[in-house]
Structures are given as structure tokens and as C-alpha cells.
Amino acid sequence: MWLKILGSLLIVVAGTCIGFNVAARFAERPHQIRQVISCLSALKSQINYVAVPLPEALAQCTCGVAGPVADFFHTMSSLLLTNGWLTPQAAMEQALDESKQLVLNQPEREILAVFSANLGSMDREEQHKSLELIHEQLSRIQFEAEKLCEQNVKMYRYLGICSSLAVVIILV
Amino acid sequence: MQIKDNFADKLNKDDKCMTNTENILTQHIYPILPLHLSQLLKAIPPRLQAKVTEIRIRVNQPLLLVLGNHDIMLDVSGQASSQAQAYHCTIQDLLRTFQLICKNSVYAFEPELRQGYLTITGGHRVGLAGQATAFNGAVKTLTHISSLNIRLARAIPGCADPILPFIIDDVSHRIYNTLLISPPRCGKTTILRDLIRQLSTGKATLGIAGVQIGLVDERSEIAACENGIPSIDLGPRVDVLDACPKASGLLMLIRSMAPEVVATDELGRLEDVAAVREAIHAGVSVIATVHSRTISELRERPPVGELVQQKVFERYVILSNRLGPGTIEEIYDSCQEKVVYAGTNEVRVCG
Image 1 (cartoon, rainbow over the protein chains, first blue to last red):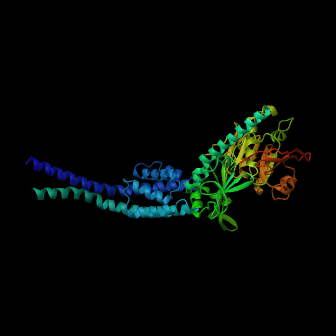
Image 2 (image 1 turned 90 degrees about the vertical axis):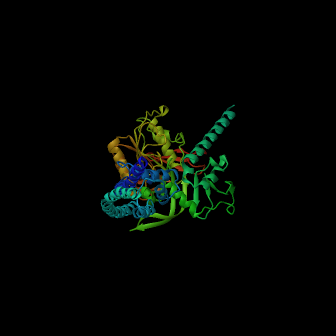
Image 3 (image 1 turned 60 degrees about the vertical axis):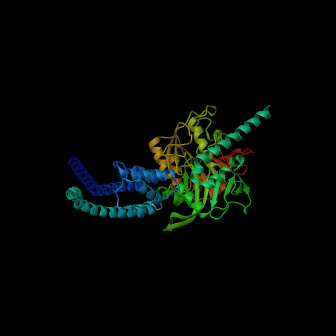
């Protein structure tokens, strides 16, 4: 009897955790996109106003931002600093691979890939245009991600609890 | 004994020169070259390495090292060789070098690129040639870079010694308005750098107590600033405006830092001429350099020639490459219209 109760409890806890984890991913995504947008805005200033080289600009654009997004920009900066022969595109790909905590989906990753292909090789005016475009595209994705977040967070939390309870009922 | 001493001095000087060049190559040049090119340069015999003044990289052409008055081509093992056996640089070599120089950040070097050069850490200038993109008659940027010329800058303390006594007024100890004249690669910048250092430090034997100097280093070559801080010793009394256009920089320094002397490199534009004239009339001495071969040639070169015609500068120092970079041909006093120093066979090796 005690074994059954313990097993059921474990199933409920595990199901709830899975549900909350998936929900957290949906909640974290718009937050991280927002952070990427604010880092890119700071990068725009670093490029347009101060005109510092990319490794420095990428390291400085994370002021006020912490967590996986800041780590991602710092990784990219140190990759460019230590391996000067790496292109910004290659450095960004490598940094995205290394940043396991990032919960960015394919659309925003593709936008970042296109952005990195033009990064550093143009003059200030063109970099400004490119950053404006990326900002616009990411803002649209952020809006969609927030909508998805509203719809899915509660649903996945309840789904986790309810499905685990259903499993317990079936097994018992 | 005297001969022995001189020989020891010479050996000492050669060793210092070798270490100096080796340091320059290791700290500043190898990091901006692809690995195989830097390994090729490392394999050069040290005696040759010490004489390198320029490294020239051209697409599909041999890797060239300029050693003072002549150049050599290098084979894959780093030895001097004929054109047929020399290592031929590829487009990838140039692209990689350019990428390393500008740190993947073309936007950060936009004004320099428009003028066809970049200055790297240590104050070494890298000249660029390729396809220019022009709008409304002005060069917007350079693309498809096909040639690079890496010019090694060396600080040679004491190389301005022969000039120093001639640019100071014996009575008032005022510094004369001085113009250093020479074609490229004759050591103008190196001598200007040493003049600034000696004037700022002071020299008791000449009665100079140390002068407040304002330096406008438009190309970041003289002071080799890193984050605005000079990386080359210029003495204790120098204020540097790094990467600032000469014309506005000269006037900014005069207003803000109250210098006794302002110095700048390579006058050429109309606004530079106006700024020099304004500085001189503001009671500040000017030391500057300009590209030309002789005073008469310079007189015909607009707009800088106007300064010569109006006798704005009191001393002209003519430099050449005749006996190696930094050969002082003559020092001319424009007030008395006579040569006050005529070069002998003295050689000054400058970078």
C-alpha cells in the first residue's frame, strides 16, 4: 500500500515538473528575445557612436543584462578576440552551440544567422540599417512569443499535473 | 682600445636593433598575419630580420621584405630567393590579414579605409590598395584589397640629436617653427617622435627645461595610442589628441591644453595650412612634417607651398633615404636664407 502511494506521488511530482519545465521554456523565450533586442540596441550604439571593434562592442553591449543572453554575447566576443580568423558568422554559430541555456527557437536563430553574416563587413550606415531590420524582425517574433506564452504556460502546467494524475488513476 | 670600444658599441647597437625588431614582429606583426606567413617570417635569419622596414603582400605576387634601400623575396622556408622560387601570396592571405587587422570590424576603421591605410597596435601603418568605391568624386571605401604594405615603426631614441640644436633659439630658448621635409620612407615620423620626446623631457646641455607639447596624432603613428594612452615614450610633457583630424586638433589643443609647441604629422590639406597659420599667430611653435623632396619642390605644391612662400616656418629639415632612412641632408634657416647644417655621410637608421 505504502509502495503504491509512494509510486503515485513520484509520478505526480515528475509529471508536474515536466509540465512546469515546458511552461517555463515558453515563459523564458520572450524574456530572452527581449534581452537579445536590448543587447542589439546597445550594440547599435557601440557601432554607430563609439565605433569600437566587434569583440569589445559585443562584450560591452550586455550592460544591465545577465543570464544566458549575456553569456552568449560574451562567448561570441571572446571567440572573436582569441581567434581573430573566425568570421562573426562562425563565431555566432559556435556561441549559439555553446550556449545551452538559450531557449531561442529556429526563427530567431535564423534571424541572428542572417544578421551575423553582415556583421562587421559593412560601414556604420549599413550596420545601422541591418540592426534596425533585425530589431524589427525580432520585435515581431517577441510579440508572437508573448502570445504563445500566454496561451501555453498555464496549459502546460495544468497538463503536467492532470496527465500525471491520470496515469496514477489508470495504474491504481 | 678606441677601435675596440667602437666595435663593442656597434655590436651592442646591432643586438639592440635585432631585439627591437624581434619584439615588434612578435608583439605587433605576427598577430595580424596568417599563421603560415608569420612562421615564414620567423624563419628569416635574425640579421635580415633586424633590417626589415616594410612587409609587402600583393595578390599572386611574391612576399616582399623591404630592407632599407632594397628588397628581398622569400621562399617557403623563409630564405631570400629568386622570383620564380618565392612564396606567392594568395587572395586568402590578403583577406585573412585584412580581417585580422580590422578585427572583423570594417565600420570601426571607416575614415582610415577611405584614406587607404590602417594603423595597428604599436603605431605601424598598413597601407592598402584595391578597388575604390567612390560617390560624388569622394572615395567611400576600399573593396577587393589586393595589396598591403605593413610599415614597421620603430622608436629610435637619440635619432633627432643632430637636429635639436638647430631648432632652438640660443637666446630665448624658444622652439623654432620647424618643418621636416622628405619623401615617404625617409624617417620623418621617427625623427618627429624623438624630437617631441627630447623637447618634452628637456635637455640640460641645450638649456631646454622641458616644453609643454600638444601632439595631434591623426594616424595614431607617432604615439601609437592604445585606448587613448600613448604606448611609446614621449616624455612627461606631451598631451596627445589621438586619431583627431589635424586642423581641428591643433586648434583644440591650443585652446584647451595651453601648449608651448604643437606637433603634427604630414600636412597636406587646405584646412591643415590654415590651422598651422592660426597656431603660429597664436604664439605657439609648430613642428610638422610634409611629403616633398626639396624646399623648392614644396614651394610649388599647393596648398602647403603657401607656407613656404610666406616663410611661416623658420627651419626646414630635409631628410632623405640616401644613406638609409633618416639621412639628414640639410637644415635650412628661412629667416637668414642659408643652410645652417649640411649632411655629411652620417647615417641614421630609422623605421
